View 1 (cartoon, rainbow, N blue to C red):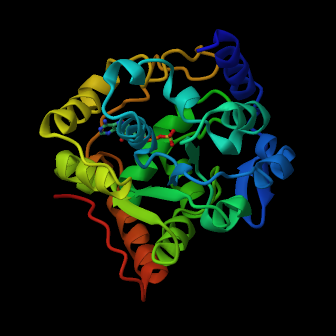
View 2: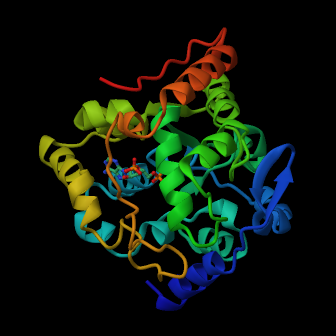
Amino acid sequence: MDPQIIEKVVQEMADFTPEMGEIEGVALLKGICDVWDSVYNFQARDGDIVVATYPKSGTTWMQEILDLVVHDADVEKSLRAPAFIKVPFLDMGHTSLELANSMPSPRVLKTHMPIHLVPPSFWKKDVKFVYVARNPKDCMVSYYYFYKMDQTLADPGTWDNFFSMFMAGNVTWGNWFDHVLGWWKAKDKHKILYMFYEDMIEDPQREIQKVITFLGKDFSEDMVQKILQHTSFKSMKNNSMANFTVLPESVFDQSATTFMRKGTVGDWKNHFHDSQNIIFDEEYKKKMEGSDLVFRTEF
Ligand code: PPS
């Protein structure tokens, strides 16, 4: 892997500022809005595999799984580069798009875009999407710590303040409800495998097998075990290619909280006040009414 491309991508991340903008009602970093034309006009290819998520829903976990499935459980190969290089993050703009364009197929690509902002070329090609959704309460907690860690984002202030930001959809990539519902409604019209973080925690082997089948592969038990082992929370936390420690502190300051933070279901109980839980549950009921999309917030 060319070290210069890693430097270029890191620099692109470092150049983002906390200023916010908006595209079609979706809150995004102004830096992303500024390069929107190139992101939206990105050219998909037949055979592309896209991991799509609302932030903090298990994206990096799925990136590692997909990379291993595409490369037939070759763990050595998976250590060739950091996750954000192996799986270009399309939303970031020029360097990540260049990186994606320079990759041989089949490519694994990442986006946090709600479905209506996905570059239209993806719907014209033979592309497989793996969407990972996580229950909103844990997602919110994880996002709060991420906002504190990512130095290119505005300081979120207190937990109470972040709670209000999240509820208003005033965070990067917008409103959680719109995101998960939009992809859910589209899942039967396109090749979309809709996965849940909680299912992956409950039975990672079963969920990895779903991904293997979706990508049309047939692996031995030994290969599945390799993927399972290499993508466990503990392995990824200690893997510098997966845990973002290759980023300088000026981008991700992991001194107070690490990217691979807890990796559990139910941490929201340590953060939500009773009143916040009531407000949240009321909003959830309203927004999810009429949908058969169901989340588990605890086991
Ligand atoms: S990002 O920044 O949006 O790409 O973040 P994302 O990767 O979607 O989400 C980060 C959270 O996923 C947890 N994680 C894992 N959990 C269990 N097992 C594995 N292997 C794993 N890898 C990442 C990570 O710890 C973040 O969740 P929290 O709750 O903050 O720990």
